[in-house]
Image (cartoon, rainbow over all chains, first blue to last red; front, side):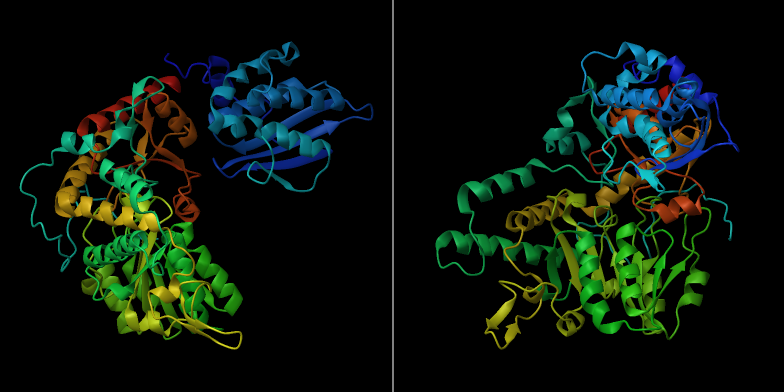
Length: 154
Length: 433
C-alpha cells in the first residue's frame, strides 16, 4: 500500500463495501437528506429517538464515494444508544478532527478516529462530514436538504 | 434513444471543408520533450511523484513565452490603453490591439472589429444572451441547446427564456455521446431563434459536425452560437468557413492566461446589438441627456480591460500557431487512440463518450468505484485528473451516472504519461479489489 493508505484504510474500505444500518426506518421520528454537489454524494438519514432523548435506532440510504459511504455507515454504528447531546458532541469532535482543528485526535471517538487521515485531503473533508451534517439537521428537524456547498462549513 | 455501436477508430478526422492551419500537413512527430521544456510547471513533483497533468480540459499550463510576456508587461510598459498620450500607453495600446489582430488571424475572421475580449467563454455566452438575446427573443420563441452542453451554454439561455417567456429545447445524444442529428433537425422550426451548440463536448470529447449543423440552422433562418472552449486548443477553427454567427472561447484553455476570452460575432449582428455593460471606453460621448456608444468591438468592452491577459493570449496563440494545429491534432489524436486502447484493457473500466470523432478527452467510470476516490488515489501517485460532473450534469443524467473520472490531453502530454495514468488506475483497482 502506498501513501494513500492513511485515507483508504481497511476499516473504511470494509464499511464502503458492506455498509451497516443501510435501509429504511419506518418508525423514525427524525429525518434529513444530505447532498454533496461536488461529488454527487446523496444520503437520507432516519433516526428514532425515544422519550429520554436516546437514539434507539438509525438507518441511512444513499450513494456516493467510499469516504462518504463509510463515514455514514460508521456514524450509524456510533450513534446507536447515545443521547442526542452526546451525538452533538461527537459531531463537533468529528468535525474538528477531519478539519484538522485539533492536533490531538479525541480519544472518545473510538473507531471513528480512522477518519483522522482525511485532514490531509482537503478535497475530501466534505465527503467525510456529509453524514454528520445530515444527522445534525435531522436532530434539529431542519426541513431542508443539507448541502455541503450551501454555506455549510464542513 | 438510438443506440450506435461505438466505432473503435478514434483518430480524429477532419470535417469536410475544414482546413488545417497554414502550416500544412504534419511532416514529422512533434518534439514533445522540447515543448515540455517550455512549461516550467511540468518539472515539479507532487506527493513525491513526477507530475502527470491530465486535467487540460479544465485549464492548460502556460509556456514560458506567455509567462515572460506578462512579466515584461508589468516591468516595462504597464499602462492604461486607448487614452494615454504617453509612450507607455501607446505601447500597451499597440500590444493590446495587436492581440486583437492575432485573434482575428487565428480564427480567420473577416474583420478585427468582430473580435471582442471577454472574461472567458461564460461571459461571451452571457454577453450574447443579454444583448442579442434580449433584443431578439420574445414570448413563444425557442432556443435550442444540446444534451451535451456545459452548464455555461445552458444556464444563460434558461435564464433568458424564463425572463422572455421563450422555450428551451434540447437536442438529444446517443449512447456513444454523439448528437442525434435527425432529432436536432426536427427541433428547428420557424419558432427557433437560436441554436447554441458546443463544438467539442468537455465531458465526452465528442466533436460535433458544426459545419453541417450551422448550415442546416441557417437554412431555417436560425442563428448559431458555437461554444468553442474545448475545440480551440485542439483543431483549426475558421469562422468564415463555418459561417457561425457567434463563436466563443477562453484563453486559459489554449495556454493563455485566465480571465481572458474571446467572443467572435459577425459584424452586422454585433452592430445591431445593444451594449452589454455601460462605462468608460465604450462610449463616443456622454452627457446627462444622452450617451453615444462606440462601434463594435469597443461598444462591448466597458472599463479598463484585462490588458496583460489580452497580450498574453496573443502570445499563446502565436505559440500554438508556431507548433501548428495540424501537428497538435495529430499528436493528441495518437495519444487519445493509445489511451483509449490501454484504458479499455482494464477490468470494469467503461469509457463514457465513444463517438467516432473525439478530441482530447478520456472520460470513464470504474465499476462501482466513485470517481472521486479514483481522483484522490491518482493524485497521490502524481496523476492529476478531474472527477465529477464536469459542469455537465445533463450529460451525467443521460448516462445514469453521478460523475466520471476524466483525463484530458494537451500538446505536452506523452505516451509515458498515459502509461502512468493506466498504472495509477490499476492501483485503484487493487485498493478496491
